[in-house]
Image 1: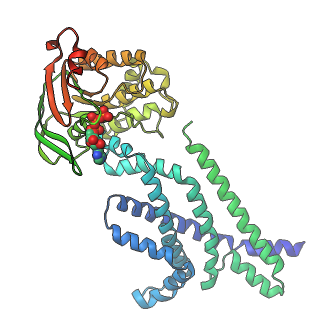
Image 2: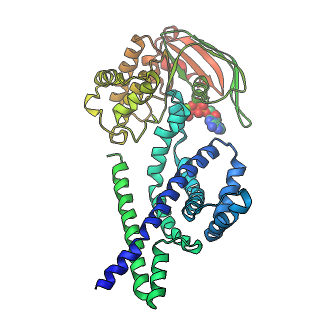
Image 3: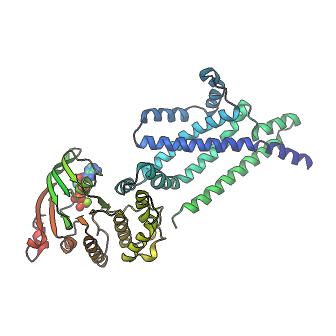
Length: 212
Length: 218
Ligand SMILES: Nc1ncnc2c1ncn2[C@@H]1O[C@H](COP(=O)(O)OP(=O)(O)OP(=O)(O)O)[C@@H](O)[C@H]1O
Ligand SMILES: [Mg+2]
């Protein structure tokens, strides 16, 4: 029993990194993805953004992660920490998926909402901030929640460049104990609980966002 | 002053507005009639600069407001927020609320301020859309089909409402294919057909039965 608790605590100390990666990556993904979708709607730099999004969606995340971690020192002379490389990778990668999700959301919004904003002399900045994006995010919330869950599971790839997250901690423990069964089960429980929590938050936001 | 000269507008190959020249006099209700597809909505949209014109000039020195056929209220905002959002941004003050509340009261929507648009009837949405436009203090109000989908009683309400808006000194240009409605409300009728003006007259000059007179042109 004591052993179980110490296992749980040990693996739990990896939650911090997992959450940092998730929150950091998601924030960056939302900002960039939002920016990409607005630029694309305004037809600014569209071919460039399309290519960027397509490459990010068309190559393995694990490749993107090692690329950013191992080749940035040689390319731009900056040595990124594991956390920095992770947030950058997951941020860029999720921005591509989020940009696609938002694109479909923006396209399904009636054009009249843009026109109504224009006739009421609402500037472009406020139109996107207060009229368009709130409606779009509400409409695509289920897809966004799926993306957050996918991102959470992808953060486990940080183990491949040595990040001590939930997965890596459980593997370390397994190697020490010569049995992987219990550590991996515990890691699975951590991930699954986080997923359930994200789903719960998503439901809450959906209820709050519905126009009663 | 709102004046347009030799305006042409094409969608692809179809010429929707052909050489339109008009001068709109102030503080009148101008009815824009014409069969479906004659270019009424397009003309209004061009006046509001929602649609670029191919050639010609639109001279407008006054502030215009626009009412959409399908209202285009902001669904994620309450009725009150729909009214106050844009003027608050523009005037950079919060005291747009009393004005909005007073306006809602005049329009018989006093108890609806915290309601979201999807809980309103068609006539109520129409009145909220009118109020939202009026909050911007337009001198000219462009209305596209303000009576579509409304029953006779509600149409009568809209008639008296729009007349009281005129009394505030607002010029109105109203596109509609409801001749009954237009002849009740308009001072002047402009009739479009295939993108051309076929009639531009004061309503009074039409004989006893203005609807029949207008129908001849359809
Ligand atoms: N965005 C557009 N793209 C292409 N064609 C258009 C567009 N908007 C209008 N048209 C065409 O322009 C013509 C005039 O349309 P418009 O909507 O101005 O007519 P209307 O007089 O308002 O008709 P209704 O009484 O049915 O509302 C029609 O032939 C229509 O098909
Ligand atoms: Mg029309």
